[in-house]
Image 1 (cartoon, rainbow, N blue to C red):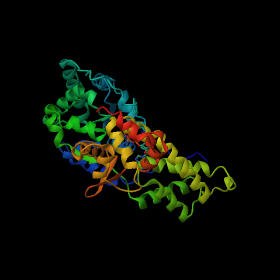
Image 2 (image 1 turned 180 degrees about the vertical axis):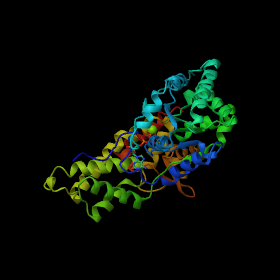
Image 3 (image 1 turned 90 degrees about the vertical axis):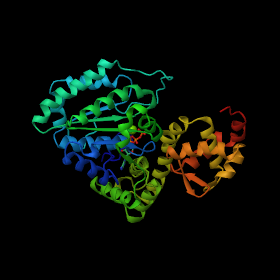
Length: 389
Ligand SMILES: Nc1ncnc2c1ncn2[C@@H]1O[C@H](COP(=O)(O)OP(=O)(O)OP(=O)(O)O)[C@@H](O)[C@H]1O
Ligand SMILES: [Mg+2]
């Protein structure tokens, strides 16, 4: 039996847990007609929270309504790629119609987005912006006759692509003013999206509907495990289902990792052929899932931080539970105002949260364990001594 869980970035999971309301909001906005606020939307949240798969799901909603959906990632040259997609004769229309609902084929996604262009910004010439507007208008002229529209999704929004995002958003703004049948959704990490939203040229994007994706409820996770396991020909009893759900902490990527590795573990060991996920298999699966989470999420998340933000996390990891921000500042040998800059940054990125007044705790599950297991934790004092930022 094939493993039904999908612990891969951008892969649509067997059950999209806890996102029904967001999907319904978008369906409503499409049915509500031109100018509905939910047609302009942005998705943010931590790595692995499910931004890309939400874009896929929202794209499917539009496809079901016979809309043309164009998915792009915000990497240099995307305006040109959008224009190409619009010019492609009705091929794209046909392929979008035949795409099964559960499909995840987004051309070009998800490509690693952390390419640093060293501040160099790719600015499309003004006529490309105009070309894009014209291409959209021409396509809409045809589609709107049949009450169809165009949805553009832009994933991996990042600071380095702001010049192009400006062009795209300006064109979208015009099309909205002209009451065209369009929708635009963009997604990225919180700080990235914030840069875009706060851009002076793009003030109208501030009115876009914001969905900050977060953890999903554990009972929904448990139900998803129960449904997926049963639907795919295995069995797990209540205790096992609860163990699996608890181990995810409601963090979407962890749902797939725990599911995948527990399923796999159930295919080795003494009860391998009984179609049963035993407590033992669940334990082995959860242990493996934690390791993978470190490689796939914690490592990259930490690499993307400044040295001081990393030091802040390492200082937190010395506590077994919530950390007092005053104590963290002391460990960092900095005053509290200085340390708070990093506290704020980490909260914004959904990596930590304020657990009570003057206290912070980890939000990404198992990050504390990860930090402790990695050498840097033990070298913390040395690291801090060498900090220059
Ligand atoms: N609501 C959900 N229910 C179950 N699994 C989910 C859910 N959302 C996401 N996943 C799973 O989590 C993993 C990460 O999802 P996705 O790649 O969409 O995250 P992301 O927010 O785009 O991450 P990144 O910031 O790294 O691009 C995938 O394996 C996906 O199947
Ligand atoms: Mg993504």
